[in-house]
Length: 614
Image (cartoon, rainbow, N blue to C red; front, side):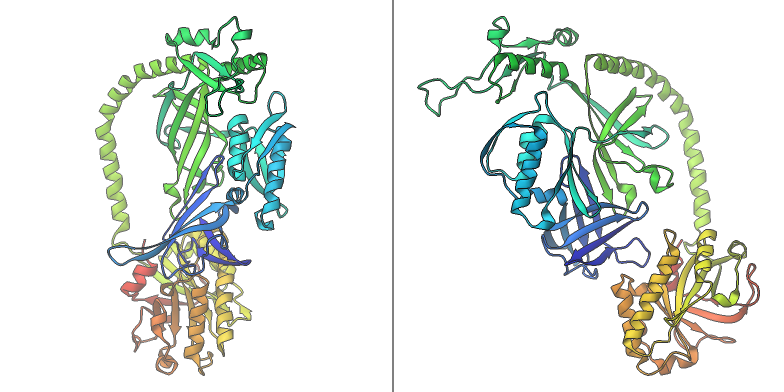
């Protein structure tokens, strides 16, 4: 479950809440990729409170994983697009980027850099960035553990953005990963050699793997490398003329290349390639770097996986963490290797549609040979597996059809069908499991009497309904005498109910009880203020319900169009006014409740569609 807030001038407003009655985005996807600014692409409809409140650069966006209480995206709004479909549906689409994108707001003036460690060079770039931007775009250099064999860099800065410079002058040459983190209100930027750790969780067939494909790429492998160094400027040559680069022939028996003999024998092919070290001016150093590169080159073994995120089902499972390495196992295909999670896409409206991409693992010659042997063994076993599966397929189809038929029988007409009660502290301690066993499918729980009095049992009742799996709503008795009090009662009802719900199932609607103790003066405008307050908190009108005393219905003259349903008490005979739920008795008897309890019946089609769908 995810919450999305917009922040303008420090004022936070929700634009997506994962509750049945909460405000909703039309779409929303967070994409995280190593060494890239996160992106959050989302769209909203005109009834969303954020429709006219999002401005480029100024508005900050925050996406929170409520299950783990973890911020998965924080950044700023950028591009916006207004759209209308052929059916007339209007929406706005926004693109936001995370804090790493702030590095695109500054540039690095031309300068020659030498005799400086990679760590100090990184700090210099960040300090230059900080000197050009506002305080809310600045970073504090954090952990830096990326270096090279000489712990020294020789670079030319060339008026590129800080983001381009970091990638061109450090990340692409030395490797490493950029991460932003927050501690004690400080925004740090780390430059780390490793993207993460080896995760204990694996991705396996018949456990959490949906699909998998593996590709071993040999197209970029070379068996003979020609190392190239700094440009050798020839005296008298024109500036526009191509210039030769330093080579290793003078220190390598006249040969400008070095050979990986084992790889050449294994592949039975000769493949030339070049690598350039433009800051190397000594042929011996160039030869050393060439040998290091050739020894370190690997074939890229990439795996694309569609996997279940089991943490959505049970908290004992860890979430997938960008940068961590996960072991991927598929015995039939002969796959068993560790790969870093390089791209993660999270759908905030439907987490089941989230995607994972695992990056390249580099294979040396021994690993490549083992992979080929594993593949051969896997190929030999696939035919046997397929033959066995063929004999079982019909049995599996018949079993699945039987399960489908059973589930269809459970669903019935698509609505919960059973007793509907409303309770308060007057019912005392309730055995909610016994209540459920007696056929109660829906309970409406009192939270407050006016704004100042909290029902003594509402927290216990909400927890009990959640534990028993009974769908529930909440209500407050209205005592407001003016608009301010009406808004306050609405806010207290919402806050108290959701605090009691905690991380469990939240109430499906919020009701206001209007009876004889409710001041009748200006009750129409005061109740409209109650509606407005609920709407401002993200509760759509169809999830706002009014309980109106039958004999006061005409006197109160409430604007019922502002409510999703009208709930009316009438004992002995039916209500004299249109209703969506009829409270027909206060003397009902239900197992698990000592004494009498209010009972309700005859829900309208709108009531069933809004609150009783299975």
